[in-house]
Image 1 (cartoon, rainbow, N blue to C red):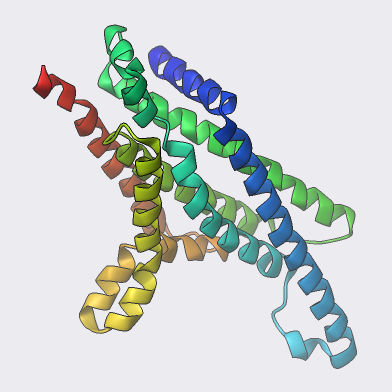
Image 2: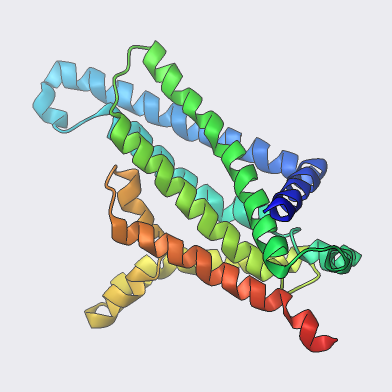
Length: 258
């Protein structure tokens, strides 16, 4: 595992040395701040209205579900734009600069290269979203009371969703030497996956359930509501392994060419 960690650390360094890394973090925190602020302001307004009109007017209103469910749903959509940028360099740039061939000369297995790249991306993603835990401190300092269970479940779902997007983007990055092509194709595929829910509603019938089951967002939504369903977790685990397996096969094509 030492070699895997070394590749992951290299991936992190190269990401932060690039301008794309700064833009990803800036864009994420701006969007997260906007969504969080709007959610809190909306909750405060509805709370004031409930005092005037009676609690029944907003029965079921809760800080945890109202603020954080909406926040994580919106952040899931933000990942549609960030995941392609985060993964576009991983293997595509290595191929273009021929530094991938240099990695092959080191005592690294294909597993070390692929899983190391993926692990580095996951570390970056964790650094990206973990500071949002500061929102909990902000609400707590303002006197807010929330349930930890649903919040931790939402964070778990967001982590699984991000890892799934990164594994898909890493696979597409392994197929090309062009970063822009990698980013555009990754975004297009993620957008199609996002639209599968709408497509299932339009199709209807027995096929609707199958199409909907393919959408990562359909499985992610319950996490944002604080519902921990093992079938949804299993979907994301299989999603990770499927695209990491395809990435391994893509990397192994160098043996066929030699």
